[in-house]
Image 1 (tube, rainbow, N blue to C red):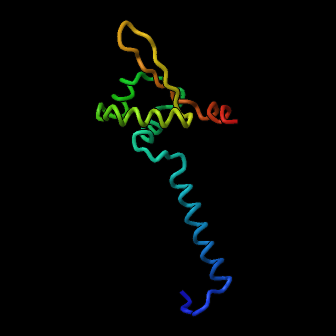
Image 2: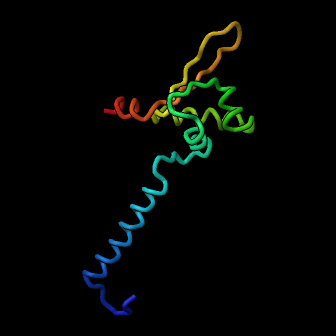
Length: 112
């Protein structure tokens, strides 16, 4: 921006300051986001400590408007991250899938 033919150390320092500002801003803006829209909705709408069946989750969070594959992908991601626990419960027929939102304190303790 100085329109000179040489790059001075203060030019590098200024560029690094802009980069650092952008990097820190991005971390703040996207903190806790997964990059998966369905997973982010589950995190936003399912209270920590709650246990819902897959059917309840589908109804309460997505109003039954989510593909099976998209929901499975979101739950797998959240389970890998430790945000939810998914378990199957035996019934007389098809097993019931129970999703439990892990509380932040339990998640931090498990990671330590």
